[in-house]
Length: 219
Image (tube, rainbow, N blue to C red; front, side, top):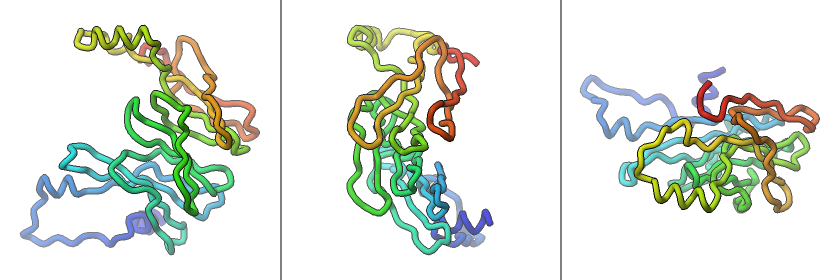
């Protein structure tokens, strides 16, 4: 059931408290949260992000964990204090693509669940989010804003302390694709007055359905 699955992910029994125990600020920082849970296509594995807080660095971070659906095996796929999440399975259940870092420093990376080095998709610049494999496993689609031009970067630096209207200054989020197997440049799939919020591949991999909104940030 749901309770059994949650216990399986955490790998721990519920904590017991006594009448003298107090929930403190340190207790809050020590809490961990499970996010971005995803079951492999073959139904044998679950990957999830385990979110923690680093008080010394004053920020949160997350690492990816893998657990078998029968609860027999559980191990960490990543370690360290980077923020990792939004893992998505390859169709063959042998690899995952995930997001590492935060904001414009985000990158997309691929990891084989049975071991091996992380392969960063170096061509993806300026952040990426919500990656999804195509049904044939050859392409990864993802969301990211368009990169600023050199002129826009100079103007942003010049006016970085000026008052701005946030919605009008937003960089629209676009839909992109990048080869999953061989190195290749990202391809912008959608351009126009609307930004992409959600998307899904068609079963044959020939089309992508999207949910969009005005690029001003209004709904």
